[in-house]
Image (cartoon, rainbow, N blue to C red; front, side, top):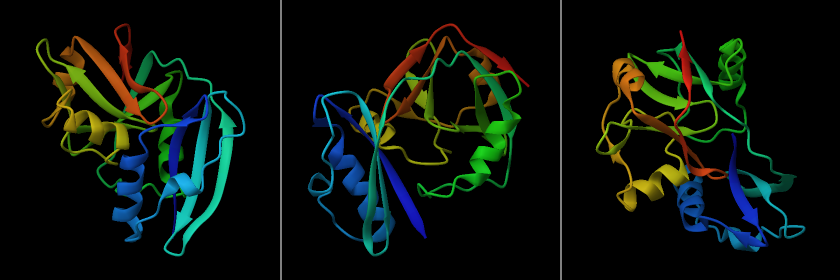
Length: 187
């Protein structure tokens, strides 16, 4: 089985490395110093894709990064999805993403509970706190960091709570905690 990490590199700095190393260790039971493998090619903003397996690091690729503008979400229900590890094969997620129609992104509901988008964990602002779902698909490195820093709190999120949220935020290695205030949902 192959896995990957998406790691932000900007101005030669490598972000959130401790959390990526923890996830790699939890995935393949090897403690690797990822710093030994990552050498950003310039000072620009890169998405580093580090591919690995049980044998260790297999490839490191760099892509110039441009953030997607996400303002609309198609709600997709799927009770069978499983993505507890960051598998290199994302066909199942990619096929769900293709169902977005005219929306920019999808939000996946599993057994009536909000999980994630196809590329990020999600949080909602309930007027007091930022809440992220206990029922995530992938425990993202940014999600883990924001939980540790008590910026977000875990609680199951229903579709109704999602629809009534004052704001939502997407979280991943490249965008950090990206608050979206003007958005739309489609069923």
